Length: 123
Ligand SMILES: Cc1ncc(COP(=O)(O)O)c(C=O)c1O
Image (cartoon, rainbow, N blue to C red):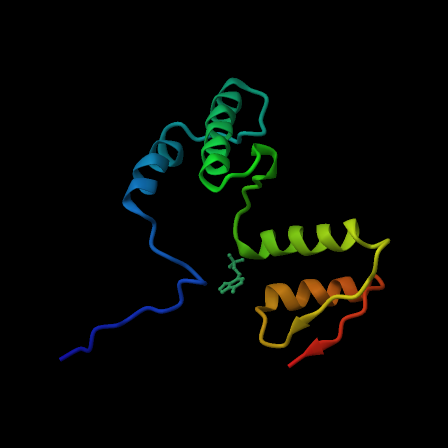
């Protein structure tokens, strides 16, 4: 008998919620366009992205301008760490992380080290 598999790595990936799939399907099949494009299809889906941003902002009590959609965690981590590091670079250039962090974090911190940030890694 095959033992049932219990998947515990939801940090890595999760199944798509059926409600999300249903909402996304038209934009993955027929109404696809680059929302940054200036043609009619792009403008049309850009409105949908704006509506989605407004919904997410309302859901978590944020401003719409604070919501940034990314393709995944590595991109989000890069934007967050590099953005915060640069924004606070006049206050200090010391980054604290731990060796058990995901490579997406460690690699970004190592990149920042090449830009003059101090990076002691605590175990
Ligand atoms: C904790 C953690 N951070 C970052 C990532 C990188 O995610 P992505 O593959 O979406 O860039 C993962 C992926 O497994 C992860 O588990």
